[in-house]
Length: 112
Image (cartoon, rainbow, N blue to C red; front, top):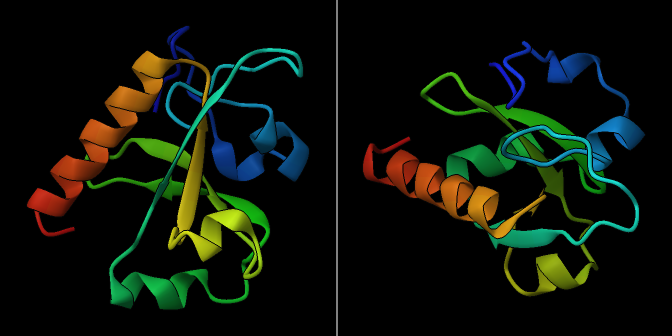
């Protein structure tokens, strides 16, 4: 999937640190001192098995549209997991957070 600059980005080839420094939605690099936005989500029970053993990592996740997003799999004792979130997202802007949330809602409505 192309990022905002129109470049195709292969998220699977990026390191943990590089994934952590990118927006989950547009994949733009975020600087350490840049304001960021986050949101958590639950996954369907069948998808929980795919996350087993990946706690504390960042992963590319492909939506049914083909677009890849970056997800954080929170550690079991993390605040995100205690709050009921199976996955977490970090975005560079409120707009990216809104677009990501809308895409996830569309996935749910489509039964994915």
